[in-house]
Image 1 (cartoon, helix red, strand yellow):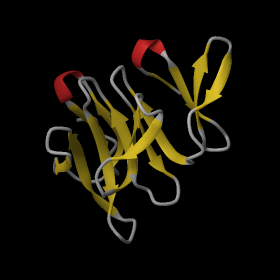
Image 2 (image 1 turned 60 degrees about the horizontal axis):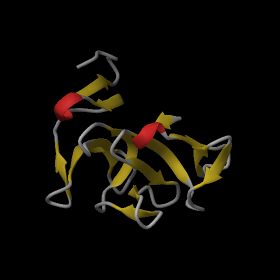
Image 3 (image 1 turned 90 degrees about the vertical axis):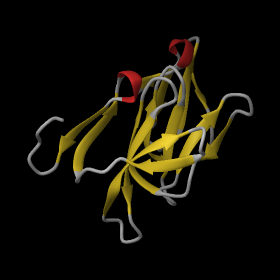
Image 4 (image 1 turned 135 degrees about the vertical axis):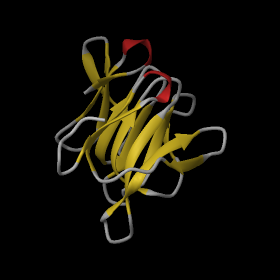
Length: 137
């Protein structure tokens, strides 16, 4: 679960579909299955279950739009449209940490080793829990 713009609550259901809380009921956003989800006051992001490609929810069209062409394992939405992800290479091994650059319409390599968890904080600050040490950076 995660809060998005206007305090809308989003959740990924047991069916791997994404729902938003509207008044007193959950409304289905899309029939696209998600392996992971992250939201902030600026945007909602998912990784599509089968392709592992990242998508951003377009509130104008009401659809998820693919962003970039890197496979993703984990997404972390932040403020000001920042989103970071742990990528996967073609063999689904660790493929690096990337940040989405909206103006370039591309993922930028942020360096760093394998992580257990990611977060994008104030002004795009990257927080990560390193793997296997579990140290927080």
